[in-house]
Length: 290
Image (cartoon, rainbow, N blue to C red; front, side):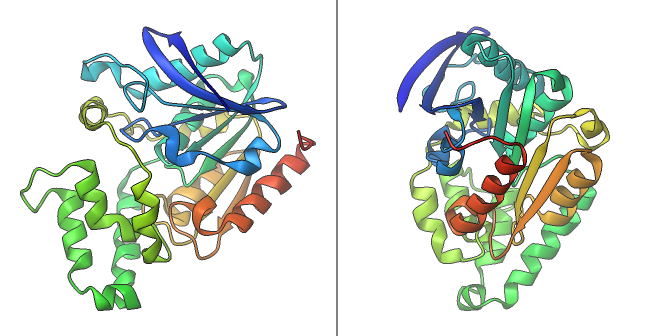
């Protein structure tokens, strides 16, 4: 795996390159985590030249110190500029969570440059439908063994997510109090989040800019490239109903893979099922093993 930097739109963008075959870009989510937690997505590396990159002000990438430079349009422009820098006429694009939001937005703006999109537990619309589904999924956890053994966990997690506790919490503080909710098996949370690195400042910038505020659903029909939507059936953040199914309904060339017994990180929680979904999709597109 090669580590490189490129001057992209005034940002010193950090990225890793591995594998062979068509180029596939994987951005960090954009609101703070480095791309490191996504490495490796081995099934993608078996089919493509995978470029994992830290978005502006995340990981080892630099970034401007101004909130107005962290809109969704800025992240999409960085993806396009990196594609041009790499000399790739067309690319695959895979994104997790808010990285999937970037990938879908890129597909709307630059459909002609895409070979395909893999949206992994991505969000397309943080609207009232999503809010209702999130609360439903959180509440059903109260009857599960882990949460019965930790009876204040859900209320403490809700306070951390909404800021009701009154404390000034770091990203790590919030994940320490909410992490179990992100997994079908809550015991996996501690190990998964231990390998994540965060930039606190870009969280504030991206929130102030409304980075994820755009409802992409009405424009998804503009994405003409094949799109694989992967979502854990127990993901409370980017759930199958408000996100996966609605995306599938609005994307003309999409495949929906709902991963059983998985939360927000299906490649960690159900790696065999995740790999099978991606392998089958690449097979349908006649993308051979590299």
